[in-house]
Image (cartoon, rainbow, N blue to C red; front, side, top):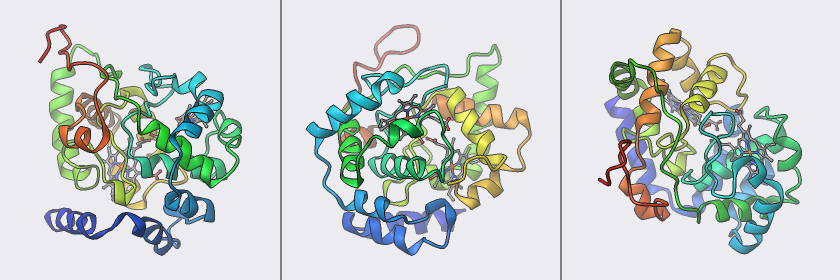
Length: 249
Ligand code: HEC
Ligand code: HEC
């Protein structure tokens, strides 16, 4: 595990922004990161925030909401705060059908081309990050979060990072701030082979968990708050961090 963390860290340090598309292209033998031409072009394009705002308003905000917060019930993911490379990869995968999402696909297909995909990702990256994601709320929440942390630190953190901020250059998504039920559904889809673009190493890891372990990991992930390192790179929280009892930290 230790070795892998070091390798990932080294890759991150070495990969200049424009090498992203190259990294994808080199991964073309792996279906989770199949390099379709659109994905590569969108990653290389400079997104136009203004045009992206118009497209987002027209095709995305009815579901993902104007603030990009999605729905705490987990039916719709939060997009604000997600790594821009992840937004592009997921959009391209949903457009091509590699990630099966029949609800959203017709809307994703309204984006004309790779440039529009880049535009909308650039716009989403300007949104402030809401601080009210859906969390696990059972009476045993403290125990679940604690046991989820043990599993997460052991088998997930080397890619998604200990604080849940993911790795932009490797297309590892941000998990901090995401809705609990969405995370749980994705983990289940990944385990059962329903998410066509899932990283095979992750599928191998998730396959062995029982339902209670899945709940615990999702509970822990959803308890992670947006890390300050991400805020420096990305922008800001939408309002001062408030604890659940309403006190400002
Ligand atoms: C009809 C509702 C709907 C519309 C409209 C919609 N989406 Fe989605 N979107 C969803 C749902 C539902 C999911 C999660 C699917 C799942 O559970 O696998 C999703 C997932 C995503 C994801 C993946 C997030 C992640 O964390 O992996 C991205 C990125 C995304 N949408 C962007 C967009 C953009 C950009 C638009 C506009 C072009 C859009 N969506 C329009 C419903 C919608
Ligand atoms: C080898 C690196 C790696 C490991 C280890 C890994 N993941 Fe992932 N994870 C990824 C990648 C890459 C994606 C995005 C896959 C894609 O493109 O659809 C992802 C996506 C996810 C998502 C969906 C996020 C979203 O926004 O839709 C969840 C939830 C998740 N991982 C949870 C986990 C959990 C829980 C573990 C540990 C049990 C884990 N991952 C281990 C690389 C990894």
